[in-house]
Amino acid sequence: HLDLLPTPKLSFSGVVVGAPEAPSLRVKRVVAEVGLTDFIRDQYHISKLDLEGPELTLSIGADGKLASTIALPETVSSNAVSVASADITGGLVQLSDARSGNSFSFAGVNGEVRLEALLGPFSFNGVGTYDGTAYAVRVGTGALDADGATNLTLYVKGEGDGFTVNTTGALQTA
Image (cartoon, rainbow, N blue to C red; front, side, top):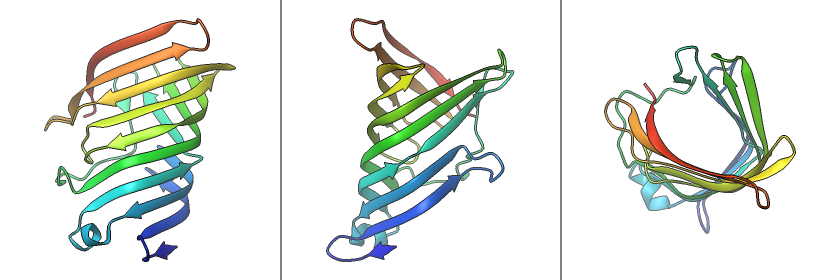
């Protein structure tokens, strides 16, 4: 559904990103507000994005690399797509690790995502639950370089007086 006035707003449901047989991302409902003049210039600066019920599936391969069925185009304008603020409600993140055979589910994910450009930087600040315990989570990356590498920061704090993890490292996507 597309509304042009007063602010262009695009709404759709049942989004699937990645290979249809094993998508990396599913979203129940998406509502995006964009600037009309940006749209005409082939710029997609999303001022407000609501993602209801997103389900992100990640896997770590036997080689220890993050695997994804999402592929970015070979050439992409570094700033043609940006998201000023995306609100996530009712999300789920599933992670499987082929090295150990373990799987993890982080449910009830609610928070805010920012994406300055399609290749990053990216940030998430929110909450969710794992195994019945609530956690505050912050994740951030820099922009991807030409080799698909970036810096990654992760902060996780358990409910109450639980533990806190704060780490920074390298992420290789290709």
